[in-house]
Amino acid sequence: MGYGSAETGITAVQLFTQIYLLKYYTEIVGLNSSLAGIALSISVLWDAISDPLMGRISDHTHTQWGRRRPYILLGGVLLSLAVLLLFSPPHLTTQLGKFSYLLTVYLFVNTAMTIISVPHIALGGELSFERNERTSVFGWRLFFSNIGMLIGMIVPAAILQSLGDESSKENIITSRTVAGEIVSLVILFSSITTFLVTRGRDNVRNHSEQKIPFFTAFVSVLKNKMFLILLFAFIIATIGRTFNSAIALYYYEYRLGLKESLVVINILLPFFLVLILSIGFWVWIAKKIGKKIPAFLGVFGLGLLTVIVYPLFPYGELRPPLIAAFVGGICAGSILIMDSILTDVVDYDEFKTGEKREGLYFGIWKMGVKFSQAFGIALTGFLLDAIGFQNGATTQSQEVGFRLAMIFGPGVGFFFILGSILFLFFPLSDTKHIQVQRILLKRNTKRTKV
Image (cartoon, rainbow, N blue to C red; front, side, top):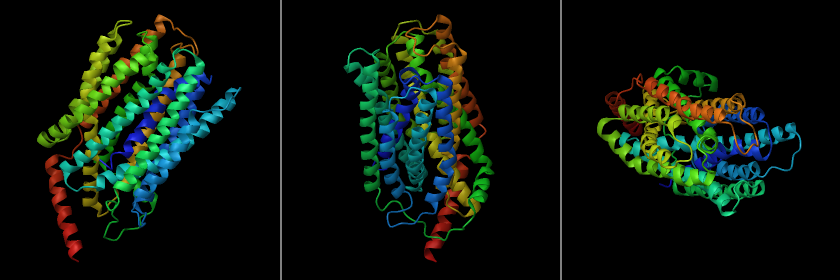
């Protein structure tokens, strides 16, 4: 639980920016949609490139506080400051000025995110060697991740609702600024908590390290076919998640005619509450029947649901999307299994190479996710222009609403389904992983005796 708490702040920042940032800068700050998409994409691409570098650095860090923990603390402080700046832009009159500010500050946000998130997820793979315990560890991480999602999603909407007129530009600015301050405190507090509670658990490896050059190590990881299949499956599914987050408020407002606060409290909140409650079920079923089939069924089911139902919802009705949120929340809980499976791949890599490279693997994992997010964000911005979306307009045409539904439904669901099908080709079975762990345990026992 102490380890997982930092994910509260990390995810609060991620969801806060994914849901509200694009809409804030296009409709309130007045930045062109395509320029906003480009700025966000460049920042996320930099974040992606820096992830494996950060993983490599933390793999080879040796301090009295451990390998990963110092970066969790430093990244938390920097990310806390960056969020404050992101939703408090100065008054800018030109498109170039608005673009430059968003690009600069969001680069800062993503750099700080890399510093904290990569060492944090790598530490989770090192807390236990037992495969079912690892699933539980990442279950706790997902639990706190969803707490962060609730904060990043609900706090801005709740503040806006409390101010009265939700269409008032001044109220929107106030709600985002205050929400940024709250999220800033959450990331600061949660990162300090993880740093303190995991003291003594961030152990430096006992055996000697091979000083392989970064590029050589990077290429060797990408030659791991097991890892590539898992990575590409997750990347494709993440593109769908990015589409979902970036265009959700547009879909609910301009397709279904539902206010932001109503959507957040009555649809998105139940979705994440159900997701949180489903975590225990997915941990249990993964222990009972293995990890591969539950992960596939969860992601595939989410994709199928998305493709079918979202284009069909009637205007102004809350109950149909609420029912979909319950079913989708259950399916989405299966995502925790993916991170747990990645630790199995890292074990296989250690079996083949003799090296422990959690940081590099999780860094490349994060890099792939960020590339998919950059692609999804950029494409969302361009698609809004392409479908005829009018920035700043209080209403949109029926044609625009229908096109939003097709993006939010089949457009999102396609990526979930494709990612789940690709995952079926993942070759590392539970039986084979257990054999790998037995060999590694014997190796480590011999080293300890020596």
